Length: 65
Image 1 (cartoon, rainbow, N blue to C red):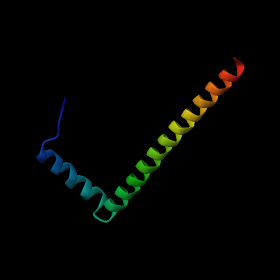
Image 2 (image 1 turned 30 degrees about the vertical axis):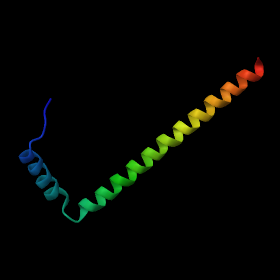
Image 3 (image 1 turned 90 degrees about the horizontal axis):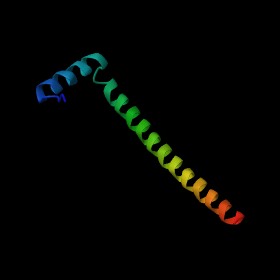
């Protein structure tokens, strides 16, 4: 497994800074943070709806019996 040494990490950060510029990086970070928040909330909403579907299925099965 390959890891990044501190020197390699510093080189990558400098290259990213040169490519995107110091002004653009905070905007990209905010956008990434918003995307992660929306993704996590979507996952939790999906899990909640899955639990509701499971409870509804259990209730439907108990009514049949």
